[in-house]
Image 1 (tube, rainbow, N blue to C red):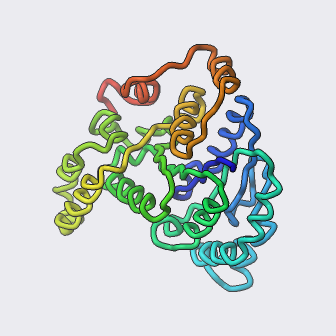
Image 2: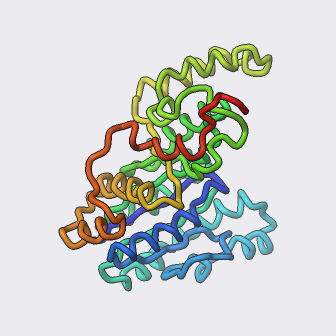
Image 3: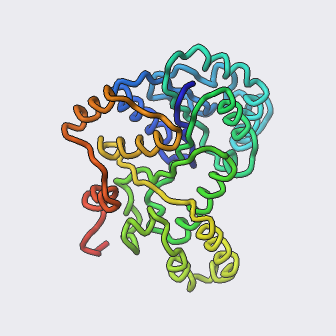
Length: 295
């Protein structure tokens, strides 16, 4: 049995950076880590890669030979990988006792309604790979009511489509107020509280007012399931990385022993104890959010 993370999310959400930094963090804790690149468009990897889909297929080759665009090319690549799954199984079988970090493509459709990624990961799960999906989205979407509703809906659909233990993360915490101050406290967004308040903020927009009933139905769908919540990640902080790791460990069932617990305490230079909900977002609020209320 092997454990690992499948890192998914929109383009530019920080998946490759996350894999690189999480590999460093896990290695410091004493875990034996292997990174698997399943993004055929990722030709500038910042990490050492034990398995690379470019050995099987690349997006540039598909676009050149089949005259496809980037979106159609990525769909073709994932369908090709699904049909040649034995290649991936063989590669993973060569990795002994490794914790897997699987870096995936950024096309949203691959996780919302196209079946190849789900089928690939489902097959790996049946092969006794205990994996959890880590879904990254840019934290600055919190400053735009319409975009955050879209992010929450996309996260819910992705959770239902992928059928894996799932952790949603707001990445790039240092950019959380890049486009303006948040209209509510950060826990409103991490806990996905009453989204009707966000609907009121866009009700005067002529474009969104045309789709009032649709927006209300989407918000009710998100709230009725009560499955969507987010953790905030600052990739530069050990505490934030540890918090994300523990969420994933709880999701995929990984249990660390006394040796790793000691490594955590040494790495963090302090005893790590249970946190209250506010403490999970306190450092991000203090470092990156405008507490004065001024733009």
